[in-house]
Amino acid sequence: MSVDRLPFRAEPPRRRLLDRVLARPSLAAVLGLAVVVLLFGLRVPDLLTPAGLAAVLDSAALLGIGGVAVGLLLVGGHFDLSIGTVTLASAVLTAVLVGLGEWGIWPALLASLAASLGVGLVNGLLVVRTGLPSFLVTLATALVLQGTTLSALPLVAGAPRISGLDAAPGWSSASAVFGATAEVGGGVFPVSLLWWLAVTAGAGWLLWRTRFGNEVLAMGGSRRAARELGVPVPRTTLVLYALTATAGWLLGTLALVPAASVGATPSLVTAIDFVVVAVIGGCLLTGGFGSMAGAAVGALLYAVAREGVELAGWDQRWSQAALGVLLLVALLVGGAVRGRLRAAPRS
Image 1 (cartoon, rainbow, N blue to C red):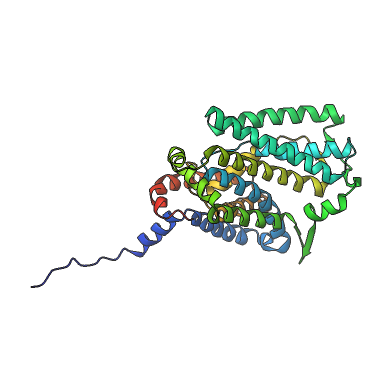
Image 2: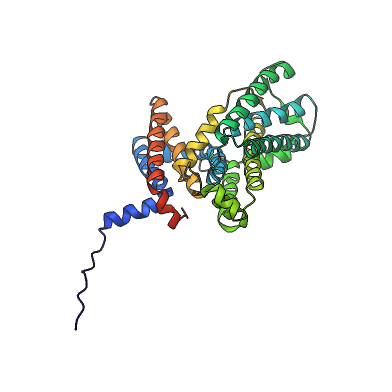
């Protein structure tokens, strides 16, 4: 007696490749980065010189720090549009304490960090206690903080910019930590690159190797189910917003210390940039899935496109259009693969 078996049909290579990309949405950012580097590398060879790479990495580092922080929050199912204004406000507060209050730079940085954490905790408490969408809560916080900062700085300082901060006590040590540079082959690489790597590695470890990361993933997948499983949703939410606010403070410090000055300039658009970077890097807007390394690649993709357009002499609005297309593609892919990612969540 014999049993007939249906012939095995191997999936075509194209289908297997598609499945892999859908299971790991961060691969889309890697492919996009390769295309953009090839395009602008051929069009503008200066982009691949040490000086060009330094400019790209300088921009990518700041985008990456914010993108990774926002990406971690997205994995937990929340938004934060106030990180850009925290960046501005923390830098302004540090400058006011140093320039007008005659504080040392380190006490001023600690005070601005405490204030930034306060903003993050307020955001978290409002989201937890009211149940309002985090998008609207943090947008309101961002508008209040930005309006207050832009209006108060000229009143307090008598000018829209505070300069000459490098005479403050402890400035040399702060400059070594937040403003150092290294020249390699004619390109000047800032210390913010090391901070970017540290933030990306730390966030990735936190998400995939700790109990807190499991709680974030569970909360982003389903908040109600997470509560039923014993996840401390309020506490996890507060910690996430505190981490995002800390990233905002770090960005403000990395901008303030090298320049030894700060000005009152609107920064709300920066928060949108961070969300774009995180989503392009594979973090789903619906929460529960994401990649910190992918968010870092998304920042690099963003920076290469922006710097390439500038070096090519094109209208800067073309880079915005291209990034809008990439964001739309990332959103469509994210919606299509949500079910697949439940089986293979690591991106």
